[in-house]
Amino acid sequence: MCNDSGYVPGEIPAAYLDFASGSGKPYPPAPEPLPVPVIDNHTHLDFAPGEAGTAGVRAAMDAAAAAGVRGAVQVGTDLESSRFTVSVLDGEPRLLGAVAIHPNDAPLLAAEGSLDAALEEIETLARHPRVRGIGETGLDYFRTGSDGVERQQYSFRRHIDIAKRLGLALQIHDRDAHDDVVRVLLEEGAPQNVVFHCFSGDRDLARTCNENGWNMSFAGTLTFKNAGNLREALAVADRQLLLVETDSPFLTPHPYRGRPNASYMVPFTVRFMAAQLGVDLSELGSTLVENTVRVYGSWDGGTAV
Image (cartoon, rainbow, N blue to C red; front, side):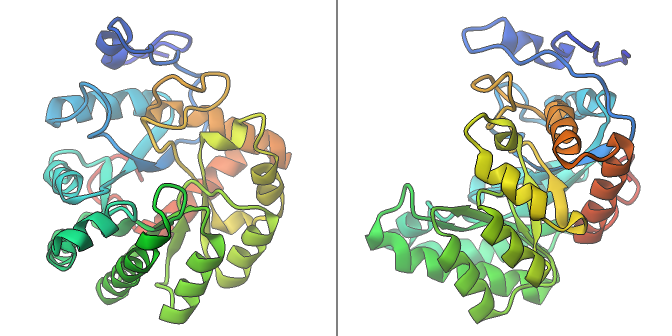
C-alpha cells in the first residue's frame, strides 16, 4: 500500500525520511496497515523533530492514515505544548486535543507562584470545541521527590475539577503513584471519562479500573520483554475499557524500542494486543474505535471516524 505520503510497508514513510537520514536514530519501517482503522489515543506531535507546524502535522497524519490509524489525540504537557495543540486543531480534522500541566511541571510552577495562572489558561484553552480532554495530568513520584507531592496533588485535583466542569475526558499520567492516583480520583469524584494513559499498573490496578469504569490505554510498553505486569493487566481488563496509543515520539514498540515513535506505529501494538487476547484483529480494531469515540466524541468533519 502506498499513498501520496510515500507510505510503503517495510520502508520508512517519506514524511520521516529527513530525520531518519540525520544524526538521530532512524524511524522504524512502516507496518502492514490495519484492516480496521483505529485511533492513536495519545501523541505529542510537537515533540517530534521536524513535525511541528501545519505541513508537518499533516504529513505525519497522512503516514498514520496509510497504516490504518485514521486519527489521533494531540496532547499538551505545559502551556507551550497546549497552545500548540489548540493551534493545529482547526487545520487538521484528524486531530482532537487534550491540554494540561504535566505533574512534573506543577511543583516548579507552584514554586514560581505561577501554577494557578497556568491552570486558568489551561481552562481557557480547554474551551476550544476540538479539545476533548484534560491531560496529561496526574501524579509522578519517579521524577518528583517527596517535597513536590503536595503540589502535584493540588494540580491534579484542579485538573479533575476542570474536566468535570467542562465535561471533558481526563488523561492521567501515573508513574509510581497508583494508590494516590486512585485515592485522589475517588476523593474528588472522577469525571465521566477517565483514561489511564500509557497504562503502567498491574492486574490489581486493572481490576480497580474495571470496577470504576476507567479506561486503560496501552502503549508500546506492552510489547517490551520485561512488561509481564502489563500483559497480566491486559488479560483481566474489560474489553470495553481498552484504548491504544503511541505516546509518540516515545515508547516505540518492540522490536524497534529505542528508536523514535510515531502514530503510524500503532499497528504493532494493536497486533500484539490481539495476539495476547486471542481475538480477531478486525474485532479488536472495531472495539478500540468504539471505545475511543465513547471517550472523546466524534472527529466531526474529519476522516477519523
